[in-house]
Amino acid sequence: MFLDEKIIELRSGKGGNGLCSFRREKFVPLGGPDGGDGGRGGSVILRVNEQYSTLLDMGNMYLYEAKSGEDGGASHCTGGSADDLIVNVPRGTLVKDEAGHILADLVEIGQSWVGARGGKGGIGNPHFTTATHQAPEKTIPGQAAERRVIHLELKLMADVGLVGFPNAGKSSLVNKISSGRPKVGDYPFTTLEPVLGIVQMGARSFVVADIPGLIEGASEGRGLGHQFLKHIERTHTLLFVIDGFEEDAYDKFVALKQELKAFHPKLAEKPYLIALNKVDIGVEKAIKAFSKKKEKVIVTSALTGEGCKELIIALDSLIPNKQKRTRGWGES
Ligand SMILES: Nc1nc2c(ncn2[C@@H]2O[C@H](COP(=O)(O)OP(=O)(O)OP(=O)(O)O)[C@@H](O)[C@H]2O)c(=O)[nH]1
Ligand SMILES: [Mg+2]
Image (cartoon, rainbow, N blue to C red):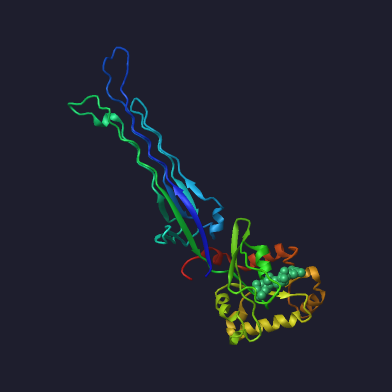
């Protein structure tokens, strides 16, 4: 499952205390009570921000803490209230408590949810004055702060699905260009289930899905990859990862396309890019073979990072903006 997750702690501000105070003035023998009320503590509010597309956009802060309200002052001075702290989250964020109960499902742009409510301000002693009790010393302290640890979840739809034969370097590339950390191994079928990674490009991000290697006959159920072809059905763009060191690199590409088409003709119609990987060990023959067929390739090395930036830019330009913004809810 493509799930982006994050745990954060919210702490609201405590309310300011009400003050017990009496007016003291020269020549006024008995000043009345004049303690001010406390100010309100700040709340911590989660709000959907359309600029955010993944939880990664929130940065890596764990504790979100609003300020406390100020205590009341003498001469009926009410303490200042603290500002609410707004925590921006991407659209589609599901909020759960530590036990896994759903607290909020933030699906609309601008939708907000008070995660930790600021404490109410306390009450100063003048409020307790009665006909028979003119000099009360009673006050009410500010309300305590709230603290809550929450789990944020965002269902992601991968924008880019990586397809390739085993050992082509799909997982290595995902490690290099995204936040995903799939296992890499020098043997086929290292990747046994899809791994998601978020690629950050300036203020924007998109999601890549590493899937297990396909083999010929995958569309009929051979190997592992076929179970995951359905995942790439939902992705917008495909990235063919080809081991450029292999003699038959171009044939491998044709075979992959064939498998996709056999699984579902629509898969073969998706926009795609080709990463000719392992340039560090020589891919000249493969480059020639692809250019002969007028197939544009991006030459990469997941080992040295060569071509990876170019690959990110090219992938990003293929993903329409709409997809970037509407990702994250509805679909699972
Ligand atoms: N020289 C070189 N080796 C690479 C490169 N990319 C990957 N490799 C190596 O190729 C082997 C396979 O890499 P993986 O990333 O696990 O390949 P994969 O496509 O994910 O393989 P499966 O999960 O089995 O389908 C590993 O030994 C990597 O270190 C590259 O650009 N250059
Ligand atoms: Mg792999």
